[in-house]
Every structure is written in structure tokens, then in C-alpha cells.
Image (cartoon, rainbow, N blue to C red):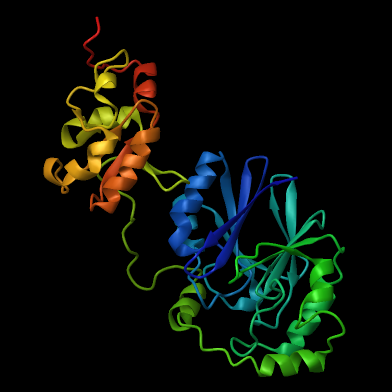
Length: 356
């Protein structure tokens, strides 16, 4: 089986899916605000992003497709029927998108929007349905060339004919549900399943009474540009004070070599206990000792919030928590020393110690 991860954006209740094989990865429906998170996961898993794949032109969030391409060189892939500009590949029904030795097959499932695509894994064990088919629901059909009749046919002809055990992964869920199956939705979906007819479904959809999507005026034009900002491209949001990287856990980290180069320009705070500071591992020259349990009460008085802070401990575990604590206290430029003093010493870097 390929590597698989289901990721979530709480602001838009959007699911992003990571598929990978032989070191190559796809991201399905990446979210602009989650690009750093997704890049961190790819980096930690040692994966190269070959493409971002969209299920449709979204109305509730902006895609990260352009952002990932600008940073990693990944290709932007979506349906030709979307009318979007800036894609590297425009898909038709039946096209394949490869990663490693595996692929997903594009199946046109219009109805929620004119350009909806669902993607079926090559072994038919998984399908990614976007908004065409949700868990016990479906996408609305009252804007973006929506059509209840087309959506009914799309689901019944392209998705409900997949094998019963095929797992279905939706584009969104607003109740915390994560996965369903073809057999379940064919039987229990209150809109499209059971003995529902086209007329039944169309009548249901005409009376949903949904409010207009809040972000549609922003999201749709941006997504028709594949997420590229309009006008001048904004500067990168990554910190520039040092070559720091964001972990999938959401912690900014700095490598020992990078800290050694910028040590004179940052505040190095060691959050271990006093008996550890001068013990066998020693401490970094110029580091100040503020144990983690005292950091909250002392940081405002003893640290300069305008200067970057690097947190240090034995292994990088306690200092990771210290970066979170400092961020909550207004320290926007704080990073954890990756691997702590164990890595620092393992790389042969100098340390101060009271022990001979």
C-alpha cells in the first residue's frame, strides 16, 4: 500500500490527502494556510512532492497549489473543465496522475461544480471524492454551474459502481467524520442512496436553504489562478533571522551548525535544571539558565522580545515546549535547538562544563 495521510484544516473543515510511493508524493486539495505544515510533513517523511491535485475550484478556501509549486517545483494538476489558469496539467476523464509506481485515476464527477473530479487509487481500495460525495451528504448544487441532475448521475455512475469495500474520503466534513465506503453511502446516504431517484434528489437539493459561502468572492477568483496571489507576489512568511525549519508538530527548529553561526545575534536560553547546566554535557557558551518551570514567570522581565530566542535542553523535548510557551507570551521569533545538547555534543561542538 502507498503511504497515506489524512490532514485537516479546521478553519474550512477541509481534508487534504497525502499519497506517496517510492519517495514521490501527491497532495490532494492542499490549503494555502496549511502549506508550511504540509511541507514539514513531506520533509520529515523524506518525500518529494511531484504534484498537487485539485478536486474542483473551491469556494471556501484558497488552494496552496501555487505556493507549493513556487517552493518545491511541484506540478499543478486539475480538471480542464474548471477553466483555471496556471495549471501544469489539465485532466480529462480517465487520465492518470502517477507517483512512484502508483497512480490515481481521474473520474469526472460534475454537479457540485462543472469541473469536479474524483480520484480513484489504482487498486480501487480508496477514492477521493472532493465535494461530489460527502459522508452521508454531498456538495451543494446552487452555484458554479451546479446541477443536481448531473451530480446524481456522476455519483451513481462513477462512484457507486466502485467495489463495495472501496473507502471514500471526502473533501470536507463538518462533524468530525473521516471516512466512509461505497457500500455505506450507496445504502445510507440520505440524499443519493437507497431508492432515491433523480427527481427525489433534485427536490431535496432545491430546498437546502444554505447561506452563501462566506469566502466565495475571495476563494473562487484565487483558485481560478491556482492560488497565485493577484498582483505583486507577497514575500515569504518564513523567518529570516536564521535558517530555521518548521516541524510537522508546529515547532520552529534550528540546527546546531546554524546556531553556531548566529549565536552572537540571538538569546540562548537553556531550560534544563541547574544541576544539568554544568554536568557532563555542559552548556553552550553564552547561554542563560532559566529552568522550564520558571520560564513563564521570568521571560517578560529577563528576555528581550525584539530579539530572537533559541531554547536548549538535553534532547530538544523540553525546549520544544519552551518555544510554545514563549510564543504564547509574545515572543514571535523563538526556535528550538534540534536534538538539544546531545546532538550539539555529538557533532563535536564546544560546551562549557564545571566537570573536568
